[in-house]
Image (cartoon, rainbow, N blue to C red; front, side, top):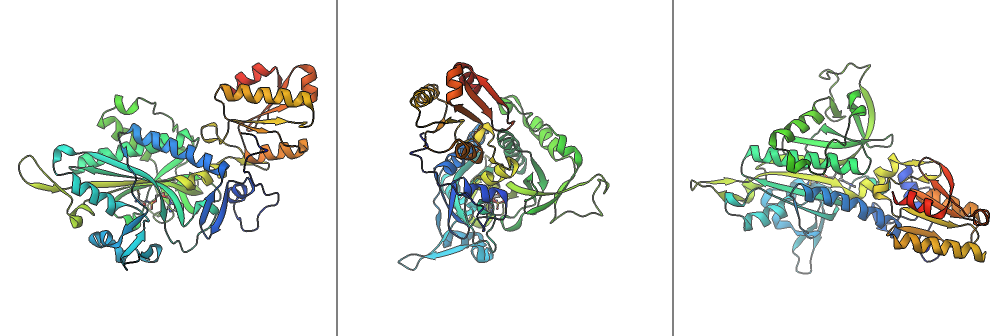
Length: 442
Ligand code: 5CA
């Protein structure tokens, strides 16, 4: 992509409305624009990152055997009357009437809808277990939408729903999702610590929140110091195939064995970690898992026939990941004074190619050639071919945070080299073009 043609509306000054660094940088780097409180448009650069994050989430869901569906954003109120949540949900639910005065709502979550789909389709215990997920926009009329996409009103969530025959099966489904979450966040380079959590309006008695530590996080968290040293990447690609129920159970036990609690449930009197060792920090909740048994299946009549002719209500869990919130969380965890520093796995482009002298014919030829060679190799490149000062070009690349910067200038051309800068380490190397391309490709 040539920057001269790209829609990248940068903002030079820090926007007044942005209180935290991720919100400031997302606005300044032209990733999003607010259209109403807590409601955002995603512009090309931001959308690329959102899609990357979404794809990692999708791949890890698929790996567990969960199947992707897509439910609508608008739901009929009657569905929510079946579970009894229509009245309970309160002001956070955006209630809508259609032209026939039918009561509708913009979904804040999908337990009811997915339970109805499964109830109507699955009749026998032989059809279980199932896990269905979707990645869809949600609306919650938050009292205080703030911090940009971190606490939005409209936001993108991955929500998965597991259906099992009995409690043991449901716990296994829970454990699979739990490990999928560890893999998902690790692939993005995030340490998300699982913590026992309140279940709120979703319900149930077993729940974990996955919290990324960050000064600007909304939750107060209390964690055992060993969590900071844990190896979060201990599950390779084949892990689910190779591991049975016990290995999953043991993995979950390992990652939940130490004390970790959010402020809502932390009780200093009960905490086993001595006060001088306990890490008190702030966290961003990037996901939450719930096991709630038959809370929805019983009132909604979602049952299956058993082998002996009796019937049993489905055992259920639900599993959310804040996809759009993750984009903000990733920036909170990866930035410096110059701007964003994208981890490779979610970067909108892998490399920013800078032509320092757009007016110089030799520079233009050399940069055009590098652009073609990168593109041919399938490396995503944003090519700054604009007629701007070198300082402005460097500042732009630092701000938008692509992992590599490849710089073409008259001095290098004379010497037969290009300059390669690593955004994270700041390391700069003078290399022959081919050597630079190989560094970027690996
Ligand atoms: N139905 C369950 C799980 S599928 C559920 O709704 N869980 S939740 O309420 O915990 O939301 C799941 C995730 O969505 C949260 O962990 C959080 O990362 C994200 N999320 C929740 N509210 C917002 C919001 N207002 N803005 C951005 N992300 C949010």
